[in-house]
Image (cartoon, rainbow, N blue to C red; front, side, top):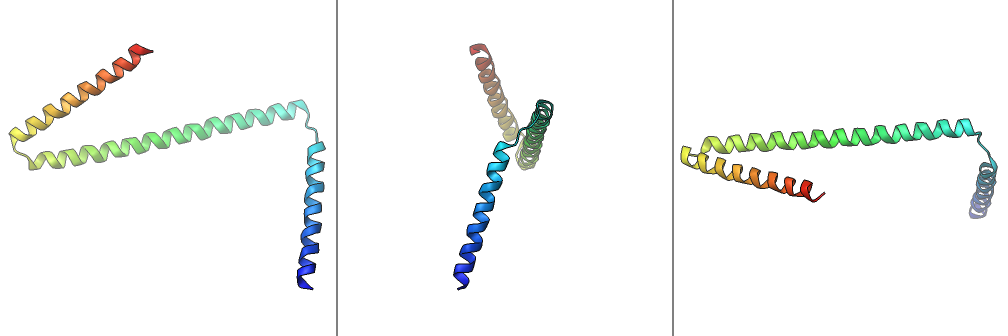
Length: 108
């Protein structure tokens, strides 16, 4: 008996939901209100994108700081000759990275 009651309740609930959907479908919004809502949505989207971009930048800065800290700790354990070689290697990598950026810009 309890199953039949829950079934009837869910059936009534479903019918109510469908009626509500039909009612909302027939609802019309005036142009001014529609434009206002669209503007608010656009602003919210821009704000969300801005926050996401800022979070990414913070994460990148954090990773950079960790990487720099790790590099400095490695450098303290190396001999001066090893430090010089490591710096040369990093310098070459940086030049290579910059050249790739220039090539991408030139292709555009």
